[in-house]
Length: 187
Image (cartoon, rainbow, N blue to C red):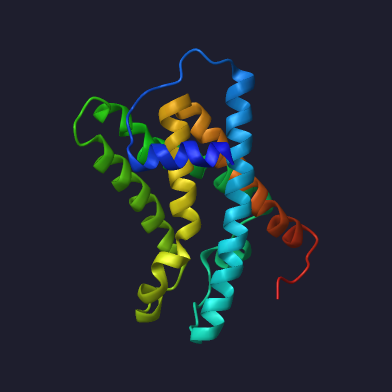
């Protein structure tokens, strides 16, 4: 719980101050704790989203992962989700934070990076009027993860945020890839 409080305090008033004198074991402990919280909170939000979408009777259409599962091999999907996406997204969304570390408006840049990260993930859904109504709850897991990744990026460095992102994606995509590998239908 303590790590969530630290991330919350950081997110409320972000300042670019790196934790420079901590050893890798402590960095790994921080990343592991945020990974566990990220997975847990994402699952809670996903369950809530399923309930809400059902209550509202919204058809989300086909999710991008369904298309990817049909088009690409297990190895390709694993590489894209666990290697390529974390490197590209962290470099794009959180890498530039260092350029603004001493600026008065650093907090706005950080918030923008979190919201853009979440917004990009809206492209996983078939866009419709209904999607826009529920967009904030659909991308809530990415908003939460974006805050966690931003904290790790600033406090520990870009390499650690890439590792957190890659591990998070690996944990979420591995069951789907196993279903594909074993030729088990998802529905």
